[in-house]
Amino acid sequence: MSQADWQALSESLAELERLMRELALWSEQAPQPQRMNSRAPFFVDTLAFEEWLQWVFIPRMRVIAEQRAGLPPGCNVTPMGEEAFIHLAGRQQALLTVLARIDRLATRLAD
Image: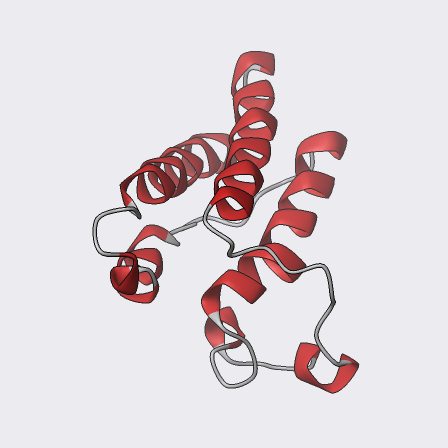
């Protein structure tokens, strides 16, 4: 686990937030607390994918990156992003590129 990989992960999370803001996928209002209680992958039963990224994934990954904590194996959010952002009609490519980079870095850092 290199310092450069941890730094790249932090930078990629910041880039993901920036892109989501640019595409109006970032909300200023948090979901209702009961919507945050899900056992389903990506909280698909209670949140839209962009809400899950904003309120669950990005904050958790930032803490992990700051603490250089162990990552679970198999981070694979890009396929979900491909499905969830299809409505963006071509504007999703930068988002998918960043998600793929995060997947690669998380996999490398989990080893």
